[in-house]
Amino acid sequence: MTGSGIHVPMQSIEAQHLAELVEQFLDLLRETEIGADAALSRLTPAVYPEDADASAEFADATSADLLDRRAADARVVQTGLGSVGEGTEAPEELVLAPSEVDAWLRTLAALRLVIASRLGIEDDPAPDPEDPRLGVYEWLGYRLDLLVEAADELDGV
Image (cartoon, rainbow, N blue to C red; front, side, top):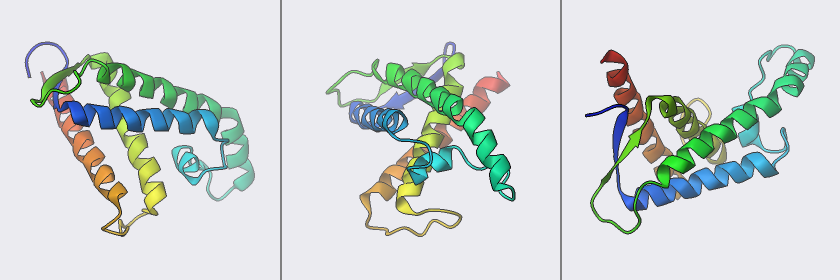
C-alpha cells in the first residue's frame, strides 16, 4: 500500500458486478417499506427483543435515518466503483480515501446481510451449496475481509 488511503486491486468485471449489487441494494432501500422485507428487517434489527413495543417505538424513530445512512454509504461505494475502467483484463487499483473506508465496510456488510437473508442464513450457514447467490455471499465476505485487513494496516501506520 502506497500513498494515502487503501489501494484495492479489482478487476473490471468485479467492479461491474459489485456496482450492480449496490444498485439493487439502493433499489431495495428506496422501494421497500420497513418490515415488508426480511432483509430490511435484518438491517434494522430489534434493539429490545424482549419488548416488542419498545423495539417498535425505537424503530419508528430511527429506522428511516439508519436506512438513509446506508443509502449514503452505498452511494460512496457506487462513486468509487465508477473509477474502475470497463473492459480491462488486468486488475486496477481502486484507491479508497480514509474517509471512504467505513462506508465501504458498512455497505459490503449490509450486502452480505441482505444476501444471507435471501439464502436463509441465520447462525449456521447451511444454504444450498448450488445456489449461485452463495458464491456472491462468499465473494463479498472475501472482499470485506481484505478491506478490514487493509484498514487495520492503515490504522497502524
